[in-house]
Length: 195
Image (cartoon, rainbow, N blue to C red; front, side):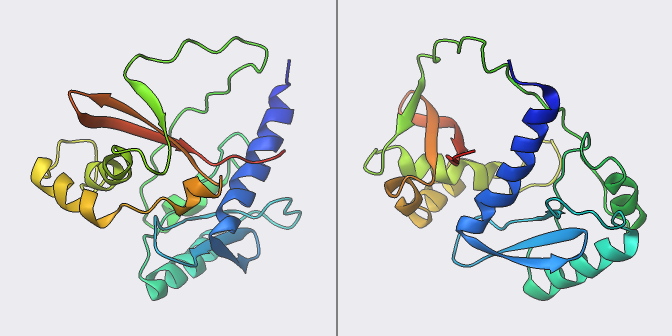
């Protein structure tokens, strides 16, 4: 059984290393900004791994936000509250709204549930790959949790525009999707990483 602290340490190393495969890391002292090197989903800023200096301040957050604006990328920060609890106050002091999500850690000794019958892991040639890549872009195009204006027409446009599968081919991404009635209902992905 893995202890919570060991799991948090693994998560921190994962969150720091995975973006480095497709982004460069820019150093802002207690914060690191990941800047994508090619097309794809924009990355975020997060606490610098193994930082031993003073905690991030609102001024540190503002410096990163200015750089994000300069790069024309979303002003986004991600962190694990259990590891960096003071970052929320610094981020909110700059005017950003924080969306908290619970951290769920599965006991490594617990058996995995049987996969849902609609869910399948996609390979680079899977006919549902383009849909699985497009759904999150359409789903998250509207801020907040309300239903947005996008529908199947927008999804069809996204499907033709987002059919890249290079990361899957080289093993840097595993993508799964729930497919119902011939349409991708929900995708999910993970980026394999050797601890």
